[in-house]
Length: 178
View 1: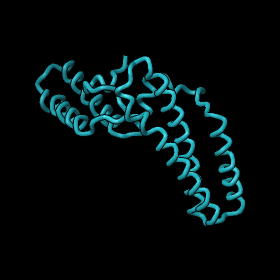
View 2: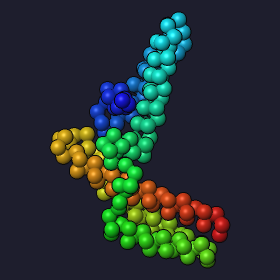
View 3: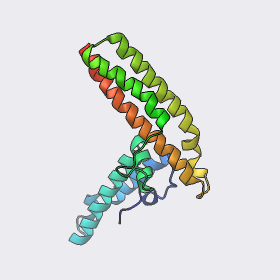
View 4: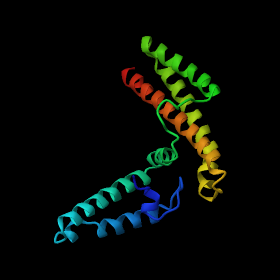
């Protein structure tokens, strides 16, 4: 049984946690579970403290990073299982053109094409970000029965962003070559 990071920090599940509260919980637990303070405890308790200290570090690393936090929440709800990563057809059609342009760059490096594709990718990313912002901001306040619908929207956003990130990484390689 893995510990839920939000429960561990006694914080509500949200895509936009209070950063100060998160940091405060992390530092408080870092002091509480610091191995030096438990040096005289029995070996079993020392092991438990070490596990809690590790859990605290992992929880903070995950929840303090927006992409990792998003993946974590989606994972907690079983929405990032392998083989279930299908994307909407309209999005795939949109990026198919970008992928074709990338393939052309493979054979004919062209700084102008790199710049144009990069602009298209950035524009797509900005549209995605703007579209998901209200969902992320409002998630914590949603009634439990509406959350699955919001999570599906976030999942689609997350997968699209990862796809665009891969295109961005390819572009960076072409930009370095030309």
